[in-house]
Length: 267
Image (cartoon, rainbow, N blue to C red):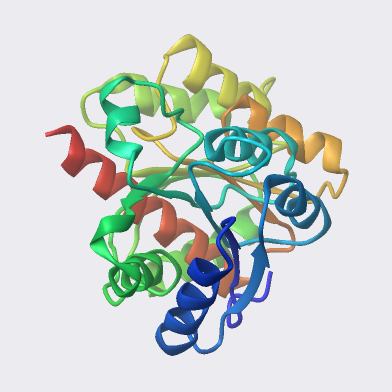
């Protein structure tokens, strides 16, 4: 993904709404690439054909529910975990009825106005503030680990290094109330367990959800089926190896920002 030119997809049946938001976003994020879709089928085609940084969709579309589109994005996109924002005047009722799925990252009440929505979107794609946090990093190569730790520390992140899934889980289990802010792991590691096993242990055995403990997985496997399996097992995001510093740090900071936001909402 070209993070200097983030790709934003806007899905709304109203041409006027799309035009107004497009104009607002052109001012707020002049370097963004924006794709307009008037229905869910058009959005599906975009999601399957090219990388997307953020999806903004109306809750009610002519051919499907915005929540259903979010579910499709999570189940069929093999790229990354990207934010999905639902915009509607009815979304609050959905939240109260517990009928808005976890596939949706956030929601926005359209009565707040398009200018506010543009600012809201900018908070995800180009936030003004940086976020610090502690990373539990799992990597068995000394050379790779040294370079990656240096990258993360340069951006103000604290790092605790483990060389195996077994060691990492012992750190997580030592104090379940004091989890790291995020986990960064390779797929293939020393020991009997892989990054996929790590995801199963965290998500299924310990029942620690994505919002409570984000997990970013580094993989050199370009097979979309294997990448999709990592997402299905509970990875919040994937980073292709060899790791590019700006991309890795951007993904980590986004997940840390989301984790901080979720903790604040849970209070």
